[in-house]
Amino acid sequence: MTHEDKRMYLIKTLLAEQPRYRNIGIPADTQGQKDLLRSLMNVRMPAPVSDEYVQVENEYLKEETAAKGIPRLADLKPVEEGIYLWQGDITTLECDAIVNAANSQMLGCFQPLHYCIDNCIHTYAGLRLRNKCAEIMHKQGHEEPTGQAKITPAYDLPCKHVIHTVGPIVNGRLTARHEELLASCYKSCLALADENGLGSIAFCCISTGVFGFPQKRAAEIAVQTVRDYKANTHSKIEVIFNVFKNEDYTIYRELLG
Image (cartoon, rainbow, N blue to C red; front, side, top):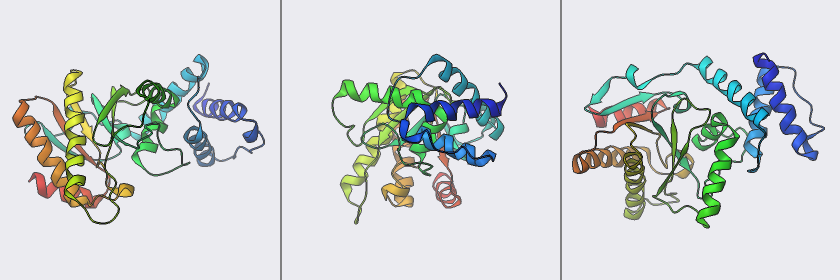
């Protein structure tokens, strides 16, 4: 199959799964097809997938990511010992683990084409990530508490693992409890990475954006928590602070000197 053939196969397979989607027309243009495929992946509930689908999806998503370029930890320069600052698309980064700012359902974002990191990670990891998260949540029997963390394979992403954490939602005034919970997210992710023998972890800006945590204070907590963790535990884990917006890059650059 060509890359285009794989995309059409994935679209047709997902359309055929649901009778209400079978009359949806497939756009003729490439971007329209990509948007339709991503939308179908975003709204799909956890369910088994065939081996053939997995193989085609794996090849297709890896080709998509490779076309964007895959930065590696070895390509980055530390801003201080064991700590890096990198601006870019976290779904393209090759390291041991990337952190996903998840919601309490832990199943990913179901809103088609949403810009949140949860949506992006689940899209480019493929359908198996949502299925794995559903398996974890079924065994747990309740929603994921704020400030804790879970680890899964990364499937079709260049990294090896995804660590999922639910950050605090700030509606209105920022409180000390919000700050405690955000610090707990970082500590839980770091501890889980160390427990699993990982050598590197990339953090997104947890709880900022749609979760409403002020960007500067969130960055201050992130940097201080990582520094304190590394100092108190003598962990050798390499930490990448990943930012996407220029504003966040400026904030972290000032904090990290």
